[in-house]
Length: 123
Image 1 (cartoon, rainbow, N blue to C red):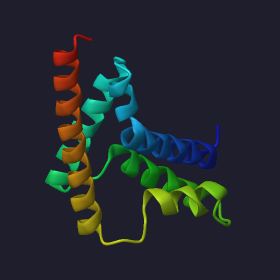
Image 2: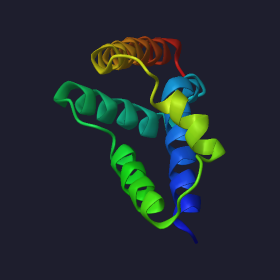
Image 3: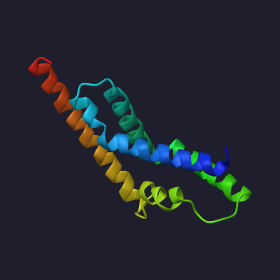
Image 4: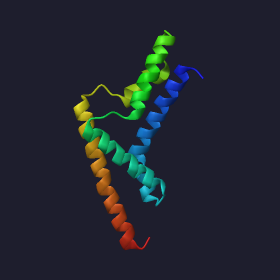
């Protein structure tokens, strides 16, 4: 496997992880055990944002892209042009971090609502 392929694979994985965190509350509503993975991912995201750290996938992408650029010179791939703009929007980092923290807290409230509803409705 080549570095560009692996780098693009990591970008796709990162994008899918973000989608899972955004839409993963569905698994809570369905009563799926996947909700535990979602809650853990949200907690991990909260810690990363509160501490000012970056996602490990970001570090891996940066490393693979630096190796890729050293080995192969050329234009950007579809993944770099499209998905990277979605994963890393051109918005102030502080605003993004605050938005992610608010998103996680809103999910926490929704988790509390869902668990209370389940407990009192006899699920």
